[in-house]
Image 1: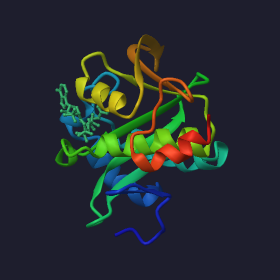
Image 2 (image 1 turned 180 degrees about the vertical axis):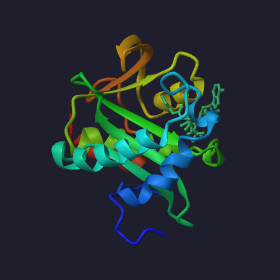
Image 3 (image 1 turned 30 degrees about the horizontal axis):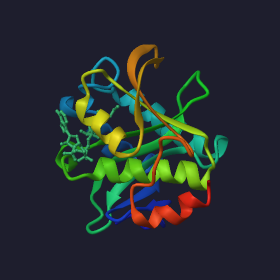
Image 4 (image 1 turned 30 degrees about the vertical axis):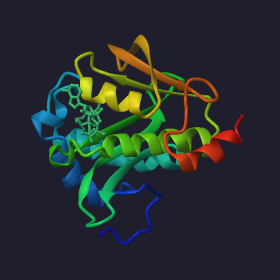
Amino acid sequence: MSAAAPWLTTRRLALHEITDAHANELYELDSDPRVMRYIGSGRLSTREQVDAAIRRVPRAYGRYPGLGTWRATRRDNGDFIGWFALKYIPRSAEVEVGYRLRYAAWGRGYATEGASALVRYGFIDLGLYRIIGVTHPDNAASQRVLQKAGLADAGWGRYYERRLRLFEAVRNGAWRPQWPQDAAAARALR
Ligand SMILES: CC(C)(COP(=O)(O)OP(=O)(O)OC[C@H]1O[C@@H](n2cnc3c(N)ncnc32)[C@H](O)[C@@H]1OP(=O)(O)O)[C@@H](O)C(=O)NCCC(=O)NCCS
């Protein structure tokens, strides 16, 4: 188990800040072709790319308070399952929700649980107006996750220098709380 208090918890997951102590597990995550299939060009990350991300991610916590990328662990046994992000897309004014999970953790609703929590946090705690998600056109599982997290199909967009499928949620618009305990908080926004 991680000693530091989690930054955010959901029913089954704990999200923690990333430090350079996490380089190995993140490199291992990005070394699985099944995980990387629909990311960028589908190539595996190099160690240098992971090390650069490990330097960039903690800097961003200070630069963009409230936004970031967090490593996710299971609350019951502390196992690392991947990461979730709520962050600016480079060279855009858009905040995206994103996630990358270890293959062993797929198919249990974790992506939906983490993404839903970040969307809720983005609207209710940060007061964001719009949150988007972008995926490779063939990444049906991720598109399903975004829809289950309350984002609606918005066609196509150009991000990360690629033409990607675009999903969006607008506060007080199509976005609806996913769980009953969100309803009171969401009502406060209306
Ligand atoms: C995409 C990813 C995050 C999904 O994680 P997960 O925890 O398995 O997702 P969930 O269990 O919350 O939900 C997956 C949904 O997609 C569906 N799904 C899975 N594979 C699918 C496929 N090939 N086609 C259509 N739907 C699919 C599941 O049935 C489920 O929907 P349901 O609950 O209605 O049945 C995970 O596969 C992953 O990390 N992939 C690699 C990284 C990645 O692609 N990240 C997203 C970049 S945009």
